[in-house]
Image (tube, rainbow, N blue to C red; front, side):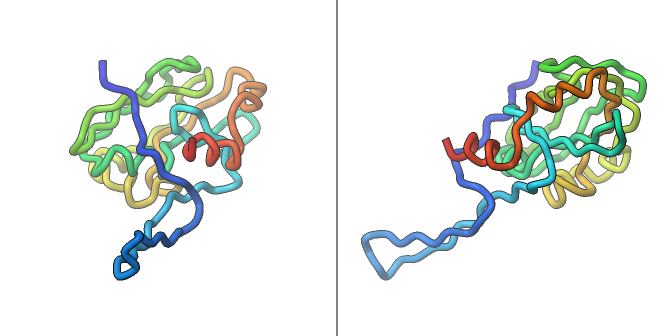
Length: 158
């Protein structure tokens, strides 16, 4: 079994400048992007409602940064059943192979087949062209258990 995604400890949503005690050194740190219109899991997946009972799922900017350069994605077949909290896909990067856990229960209705030839899109556009799959929800109420952007930012800053 692949290792779960373990992300580095960084803040999110804005750039921050820091200075060391030696004022001659200064660096700018690029921090993670966390869109307000999405829901988030504690396993670093994002979800966007596409239709009444269909969500689009991908991994967060925070997760892709922790993974490093993505080189391969193993996705489930359309029609496969997924269960909340269970692994359903794998992402291989230059650093590791990581399971992707479904934050909801349902059925895969579409996968992003473009990732087969272009897995790096998870790194370059995790909330757009880097989406993984669409899931038809078994229960809309499962979305209530997920985090909004503010709660996810708090999680990643902890």
